[in-house]
Image (cartoon, rainbow, N blue to C red; front, side):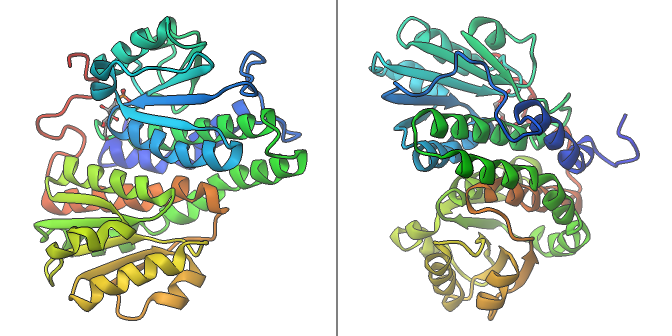
Length: 362
Ligand code: F6R
């Protein structure tokens, strides 16, 4: 079943170009138009609330950037365990969207039930079509990732992101923010992702070598800006859950507000920084780290590396990617870093201690 891979996680990481391609074919027609249910009309909405746990929550955190920038739609996000007990007021003209691989996570399900009578529409973005959330939500959208066995979520994360990206594009069209031409350009950018992901998978051996050093670390920091900020959080979560190394993700700009105190020679700092609008800002944060002898692993593209590789400990070169969708591509090195570091430490990658695949108790 592992199809020749050492772990399910390795197989599921490697499958991503194929499953993302499948998901794309479900949600994007060959002519570039979006294949989503008619009833999903975002035009009159005042707000969208996104709720989930863990990795699925970080997918929501990326999607917030997309709904705001591509559709000018106000978005609130929360982790389900907080949302459900806060009993938040919800505007009448709002929808609530729940993201869950299993569709069974207790806190997310409770949040869905809380919203059922309070919002216009509840939507479940799930991987398991027969799940409780799929049944109970007004509308269920499958992410088409296929069965995910590894406890650490990988392909479900990128397929969650893809489904949310398509929803954000639909919202952008419905709300008159995106033109037909804009939509076509974004659709092309999404369709380029499987090919770019294949290139990213080619970094696996380089990452395995870096992982020998990362496995020695006590603490690792991940930095990103804009939609790469939630990816920094996801990179840190993935590393801690399977390698048991303490890791934290920060918005690059937050560094000087506290976490920079942690920087010293023994602390690797992994920076996700495509050569985008915010690149120079991230680089200046990275330089602050290097000035304090932090060992920077810069994950960027050719332009970014050319501009900023000086003084870094290590570099990973990804292909260029359309700016909004960079987190979908950069997820792969984040996953591979965690995977190879865990392998270097010899931990149980597919069954990390204390964790369950589906968390059906709160
Ligand atoms: C991390 C991970 C967990 C899940 C979380 C939500 O790798 O797998 O953080 O993302 O427990 O699970 P689902 O998506 O099934 O609701």
